[in-house]
Image 1 (cartoon, one colour):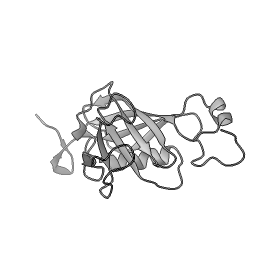
Image 2 (spheres, one colour; image 1 turned 90 degrees about the vertical axis):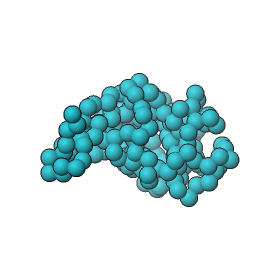
Image 3 (cartoon, helix red, strand yellow; image 1 turned 30 degrees about the horizontal axis):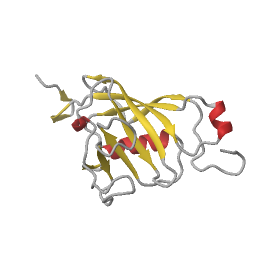
Length: 171
């Protein structure tokens, strides 16, 4: 039997996804990288929320200041795998990695529709010029989200790197 959200009788309670988001590549200064061996954020998001919501949560969790194009890659064997399903902004028709159109639109694709399982990993690419690459690990999937505002950051490891490397650090 499906449970309903109280106060909204037509809506099922959505599953809660706990995701660890790691920066795996980007323009990080060498000195910063030495001080921060691991840079990750743990985010919780409901299955009915869109990939665009996940992007906004990652953007905020890493203290970014200026928005850029981004995409999620699902099902690839490695970063930049041309066989991965790509989910991007509706206006993006292709880029230097692939001439294929995205498999889906981040504004319409829910996290729950990706059919993720605990232990799965997928990619997130931010700022196609500076190429910030992230690995997202599915840490847990709970039967239903408790009351509260989602998505939300629940854990931080390491400092947030500056979005743009300035002259104070050498790569």
